[in-house]
Length: 414
Image (cartoon, rainbow, N blue to C red; front, side, top):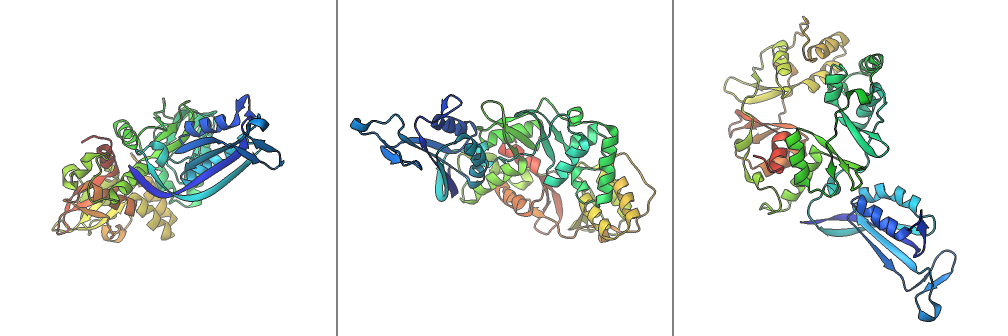
């Protein structure tokens, strides 16, 4: 596929005989760029030139130099060039490195290396769980690789903290809590004394940096994962790719043409109605918040759609939105009671005195049931919604479509 956009070029001026740990520097640079999945690298021998020391190097027969000038060029996306530059600076002890922007057309299939995040937050196996939780909250991420050296030995996800560390609320809900309540959860994890090694998922599932994006989607869908550590040919951590990275990539590729490119998953020609979830919890706007909460904690969808008597969608109840609303009300007792209710398996006798119409979010991200999945992709990326409510032409509830379903289609599943 042709991918157009801004790129950057690294140009390195060195000598042909420059060495790094017994290897020629230009060979080491090109090999490291290939191993890390850079878009391209070329080493070129110069005929004549001089560097900062003004010593002339030439290929003329009568003045044949043993140290001809060498130029290595590396081209890739700006963020990947930025991530590679510190490593390059360590490799080049003598010479010059330049960097400049260009407009490029990449003629290549979609590879994991093109869409992954190169900078990855990691933890060691013996990291305390409070440190892990604080890192997740600080970086705004839902999982972190556990590494020894540059090898991935496991993953700690928000789900692992819930299942194996006894944490009460999901990481995404912690983000909305006031600082004092966050601190309570961190202290509980410290008291338990567990480390990343105790709760991490393993053996970890990884994807090679040269794999195609649909391959990563298929692996995620089959293993029910939301992200994959990316490893190079030596099995060392090179980046991480998430579900939203894949969705954004396919959404961009489908946005440039009115017809589906042959290299893209043909399942994207399906409509929302072909793949949507149909068993959706609903509630009336005049119902109590307590009734909505009972339905909320009972569904893996983690949301309840609010409909009127004719089935028209008028709002949605989301646990994260409720935390934010009660936080803003400055009623710490109610906020704590709400947090307790949202912990699976717990109950409370607290009466909130709030109706669903007061607690719901009235703006609902919706799609029509006859829309193609390509349009759903655009809508998901545009709104950031993980699950979109499906309605008919008159706004009546028909179902719901989620990221997992779309990821499965991208990976070749039905």
